Image (cartoon, rainbow, N blue to C red):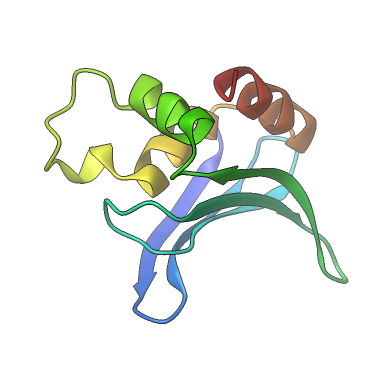
Amino acid sequence: MGKVGQFISDPRAGAYCDIVLDNGDKVLVNHSKGGFKGGWLTIEKRKWFGSEVLFKCDLDSVDGKTALAGLTRGLPSDDAHATPLYAFVDAIKDCASADAVRAKCVALHR
């Protein structure tokens, strides 16, 4: 299981969380708006110089709403665990590598 960092909320940048996966890959999960709102959710693999986008999802789209609904099924709508950031972090924290994160996210998005 990956090492999940702190959940950071910034009024200007949204909310984000870093994860170090089992193989040492560093992944950043970013929700552009934070909280329960829509917006964009992006998962990036951090590199020495820049980053590589593994997954990007418009949470206001039909696909984005479907993916989020699947991840938060059974949770009260006002629960912090039902936020997009927490739901996606929880979904990928057990992935062993960035490639596994990409594959899992693509499966969620369908």
